[in-house]
Image (cartoon, rainbow, N blue to C red; front, top):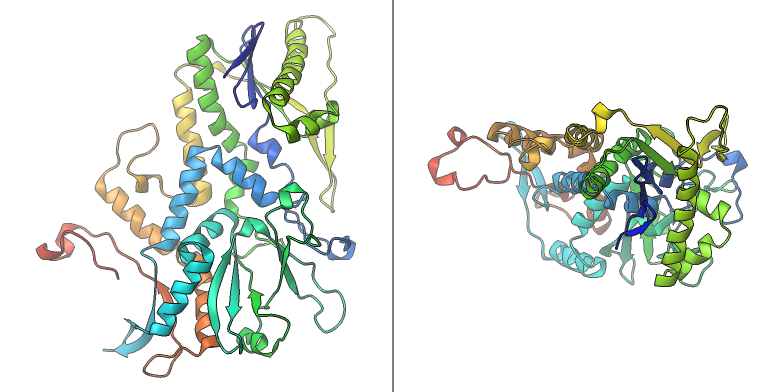
Length: 469
């Protein structure tokens, strides 16, 4: 429930507050502050090799923190779901290509061994493997497929999808015959709880490098029966992990705008006042100012939650006093800053408290809907989704059928590079297992696609649905 203290309101989640006297909405933990520590380009010559793993983000929790940020925003969550659905299409199929009438034609095939492989892969992964892979690729730009070999190492028995958030890569080898290669991947569900690659619950899997003939490499190795082949979207700077393009929505502050709108609307309906200021508080400020903060977070019970709210209220009361004397000549306030070093160049300054004065025309009673639409558009743009594909643009009337049709068809085309990245994994399995077509060529995999057409493009007896292309 919402807690009120003499005109200061703390939200039920403790993530925002409201100072009624001055119309100030306080964002106690913004998406930007949570994601301030982003993945950085590793400087190989200066890497500390004590932990033997390449951190994903400065604190090794980038996937966990990113997921938490995404789940708090409707547009972000739905947009990435749509992106995963575009990559997925109508699912996987396998077959071979043949030249018919001077055209390259894909011919679906049936092989009970391959169907068994699909069945066992879904069993060990706990669901549709391809669907799980498209979700990870949409969120993090990476997938971590694990190959399970038979006892005689002659076949890949199953493909196990390992959640990307649980996987961390070993540092590159710096000496010996494997210089520059990543030889291991560590899997743990406890990275957010201080997990280490040396923990008994952490799994280690040798990594197969994507060289000239990875199938031959895996046949010749004798260091296990389960191997990893990390696959990621192309990244311009990063060495170990992909930096998803949609992260730009966080860096650009548009996600904070989108998150702010519902809080503003709720405050407006409750208090019938306009908001004049936004006060953002970085997440690192609280444990630095209050030594007991992390202990209370860990306890996570009703008593500790009340203490956390009391601390936040105390801070807001300080700001309330400050705002009440803004007109006093010569008045000043000390605000902490934190320096974040990226390994190269000058450090980045991050303020503990950031105060923004809002323009009335931007976030007044009639302005927030337009801001919400703009933020929604920016989020979908960062993800690479056409807004019309879901039926209508946020806050407007419905789009017409042609808009949805063209958005759907274009989405099929633009998702091809991501789908092809996953298909490489399955083509590798085909080559390792020696699966061949009747013509002797390796079995190939593809994503089934349906093209949305107009009624005049197909016969009346097929107007109920469109057959896969």
